[in-house]
Image (tube, rainbow, N blue to C red; front, side):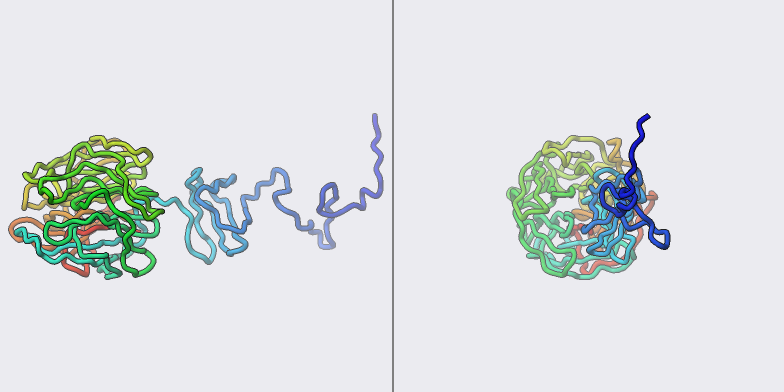
Length: 411
């Protein structure tokens, strides 16, 4: 048997460097060492000079801690999904780190533009340029926060990460614009021009991915029978014009647009003059630029519904079967199964719809509209519909302006 020689000097070589012995101090404490140097001891705690991100995948999973020693923020991982982790701020600071869905808001809904009483076909009724916001966390009236570049109706409302967008829209008598404008969620600055759609259009609908806004279908009045089937998209990151990325299954306008985490949807609509209405629900993927497919049917052949989106279902609220008769139906369809829509409740009034609705994580909102015959009255009520429970809408506040046909988004 070999006998290893022990040099007494080795016993005196103490410290925290390589090949040294750890020595407790006079109080019995081990000297300070880097926890990562202790093999097989996963502390689940990370110290860094920056905050974590949604793709910061903790080896310890849910419950892992992250400390930003520069900013003083502390986070705990509350959802460990690779590439889509949720880091909840548990320190004195604010701002949780979580995946951005691109279509649901947490705090406010926004509505932009609009038009007064549109019956019996008066094309010179005043449009408005107002952008207002209303709370998702409490039921209250909207407040005026900024203005669009011009007064318009029937623009498409889209949600970016930091800005709301309004694409196209109808101006004065039989006129449309192709401008893509945006406004800041964090300030009261007026909208700015950031790009152009392919053509001047209104009566379109939209969907919002994490990175892009989509404008689907629509119509203009040169000639009045013209509707388009184009799906176009533009970047939320760069100020740029839209590009043609696909087509709907049939050309139409005045549809309800909704959004899932992976697809955009277009429901219902009409073909122009003379009017043919549809009940089809189209969807197209965000991951690939391609045409839409017909995946389901609405409960009725109609146009003009207001779209809202939960994480699992698309919603169409209101609309009308034949001009000028409005309807109050609230219907929804599943994103997972591509099944036909079902009637799940009613709006307070028989409404002919707006171009888009707002969506929080718990409710869909319809903001301003006008009903059908015999009054064609413009309504400025804000109604909400629960995603958790099927049922009728409730009145939660009023707009600052008495108009309908608004473009909506959320933050």
